Image (cartoon, rainbow, N blue to C red):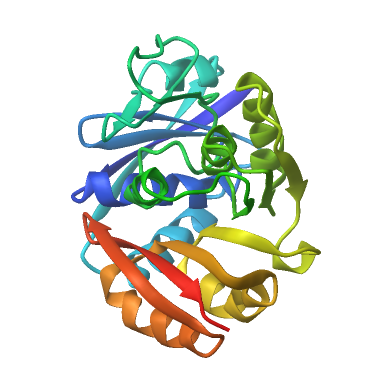
Length: 279
């Protein structure tokens, strides 16, 4: 089978590459390899649509006007794409607290939580600031004996960490079948008891003490009311997946459902919030 290779060059690489890769997966791209200027993206020849790709890039730039993207397209023979991507997959250490690594890395000694994640294309490998920040917030959060929801779970890394920290019941939900299968694989690799489900906010059927939603601004604004109905009084809501400029509107919307802001952190223009449900 022949593949199309697209070279993406981004002038704001650290901030946008993982989000753009996630979007490209939705139109048939199967694997990615990081470069110094951006990344290489691979799509089966029969699936590839330059028109669809350029439309996606146009929407991405419209939503992120400070980023500049250029592309080069060429046809190549089939490769072992996961093997190619693995070559450029770095492990991530968060505050000497949590180490997220792949099977070809060695876990670290004297780190409280080592989490092995299969390096596939589900969002949430801790490389992106949004996932990184939620892990930072979980560092000081007491989840022992509590019920936790990881909504939009991607690889499942946040659900896995919550269970490792002593949560009583942990559930991970994602609406992407690839992410769902990947999360199940990662839960097994780390030998933790986490329920993984394919679905979205409509799939919620119980209440939680801690609710994590690392998605994007529009989905969060759409689903905050539904999240609220499944979070217990005095429960905690962690939000991430949006820019600092989006904080005000999200805090305002959450306030309609009884949430107050406890803490805000930021990294590379991305924000994460801890809120408490007061009623």
